[in-house]
Image 1 (cartoon, rainbow, N blue to C red):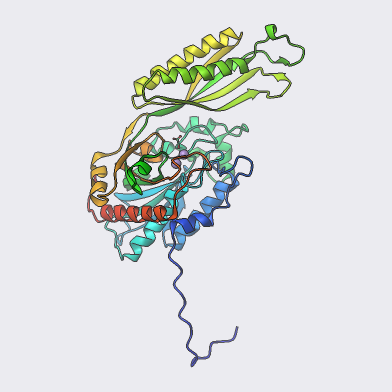
Image 2: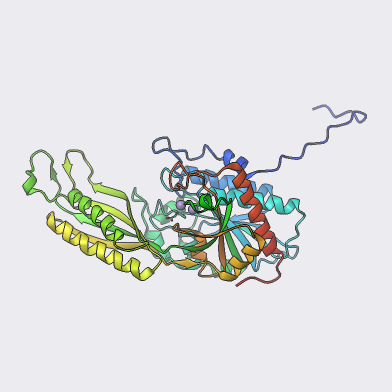
Length: 426
Ligand code: GLV
Ligand code: MN
Ligand code: MN
């Protein structure tokens, strides 16, 4: 290339355009699109989720953050103070995995907003007195290995590493094997008290998964609590046989038992005020049109603010299933896959966020989050961003661009307030 002539004025290189949340989300809008189900399918360690992890790492490095992936698959991106001491950090972030056929915002909105919040703080000339970190948690949805918030449960020691290593995805691959194939050493997963000691507070920004902000006509809310929830697997065992040669009276068909059980679950849950119970996944074995199934596995998601009511409801569901199964000549067995008690976010941190964001209402949520799991170790809080459809875990989930940018400003204001504090809250 010819050298520029010294007397010819050179154009001043244009500043790279400031990143926006909607712009960042547009950059990843094609990753993991699910042409069959609609929306996005980005299970942990799939090619889509891996691509999103690489995208995040590149974006964080572009901002000068020190990035690494820990032994539990959590990506950390650090903006250090002048001393470089990693203690009492203000942490934000979310997740990049999705439910099958999920929306565009559940998880990535919090990650993209964290990146933009860093840009905004840098543009304001902020010199943090506490370190800031962005964390990206793997398998928040539990849509591949069945246990939601797998990364934060491992980090906090809430999930036994042996149990985690043995978890299987729907194709029968263990978590240990899949993690190893993705460059992680599964022998090293588990509680990381050294990492936890570095953390001061965690603020997760998330798309609202209901209609609270629509009704209040506000773009941003502060979270108050997460509804207790858990997952159970019910197995109904019958007798596999031929669809044409087996008389109706001779059948032990677990699909019929499953149908009755599912209606029973709905009816039982309706008897408990504020309870939610869902069967969103059912798997007949072997699963042929002309085959009476020998077994049906179905997964039940149960939620209630009072954990003892959840326990009572699940017990009722299990007893009911035994009766329904017996009526069809089948047997049933129920096992718990995960449980997350109701979480009330740290009151001191919530009050501080209310001072920093005086217009934001306070809302609770029925959805689970890593902020709930981390809340057992450090003060945690959430910001919710208006979702004009009120729908989530669906391609219809939506955040308007202007609300996404308002959310990043609210997150930056929150982080700035917390970073300016010499001591932690809580
Ligand atoms: C996660 O979004 C959950 O609430 O299951
Ligand atoms: Mn989420
Ligand atoms: Mn979700």
